[in-house]
Image (cartoon, rainbow over all chains, first blue to last red; front, side, top):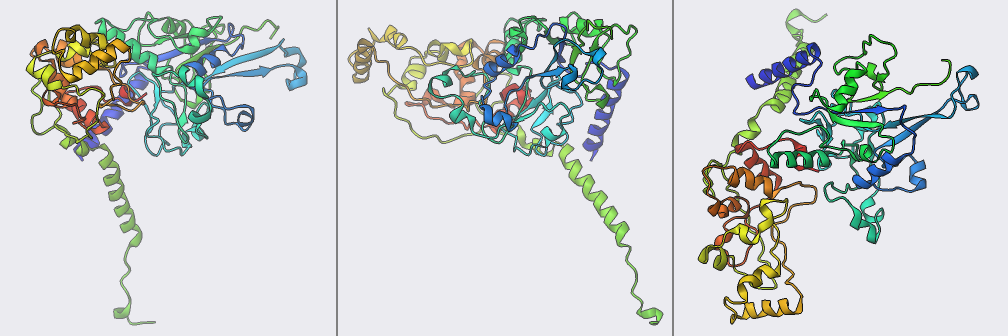
Length: 285
Length: 213
């Protein structure tokens, strides 16, 4: 009983601390991203790189249309042309807007408390980790995710997604998931683990730039910045600070309205770790 | 109207159910927060004698797997005192310990014990360029990230009390007493419980993602 209350008070203390100092202290790292939508050209290279890095199954057109796609990262397109739904013709924008959407690695993740088996949890790097061996495929997490970035493995893709020579290109650092588990973006946790191992071998702390996610590595316009928010010198922390985006708030208080950073569904208090730098529009609006 | 003595006494069911429910909830939720399940975790008896480490004691009886050449660990590691890391040289710098290439066998066996039947077999394989297809004894599932290098660093190279010459004691923590085996069999379970008990006792990482991938 004492440990019950001890645990409760420890968690409460941690919760209070996180409100008073919206910071990053109880974690070893706080992995985060900053995505510049002004640079994003919607080429889907990030999505393709994710397929290659994380052993994602290509499901084919039929299953894709049945909303059973397995890509952990998708580029959402928004068209502002009046014929496609934008009501005010004066505010129309030429072409489309793109928004790369992957798991936002929420610190207060809505997917976590609903998991009946605790297969998803917040790990020491501030990541929303998914343990495939524990997952029983209840899909509650996907229902509770406001970003719709959890993907259910409906078929045994390990049998048919990589016919004979293609199975040789699978990444050995990440498991091939079988039917019946939920999958999601991990911020390339295998690369984080490898970088940590390398740093430990050389007896130094992890440096900014040691970890590069697959999407960041392949982005032709370098719209994606990835790093550790706890490191005040990291590029991602500078991007967050420059646009006055902080963890631990539901509404960013910006002194300058020209600053662009925002987090998707910030008002839901999911504490997501991905900020988007809004596109600069060349219209009057 | 019945007489007052016949009237059944009203039992306050609702408060009773509420109180019982509250007690049950506290028990159920409290059980999740106690560390009762972990108390038996520390290994009880002593296993391999590694300085500054609590070594696992679990045992496992693996099947005897016939290898292409009847290689004896006892002759090499015990009788002749060859360090494990001499042949399994990748263990100190990579995830896998590695099987030595045939050239490493031939480094000694061009001159040593060349008249033994198994060595004649080996020499023939070496000359025909068909290396022996060793069968794997200790295998971990593909979803596990395990690094020999990190464990050797923790228990051998960064462990002040453990001489590097006694690497076999560190290897024996997970591989059993290979030194006294003529043919290696799996003698430790290498299950998740086996790993986590040792991690708890020796304060290894307990995060799921440290090992699961």
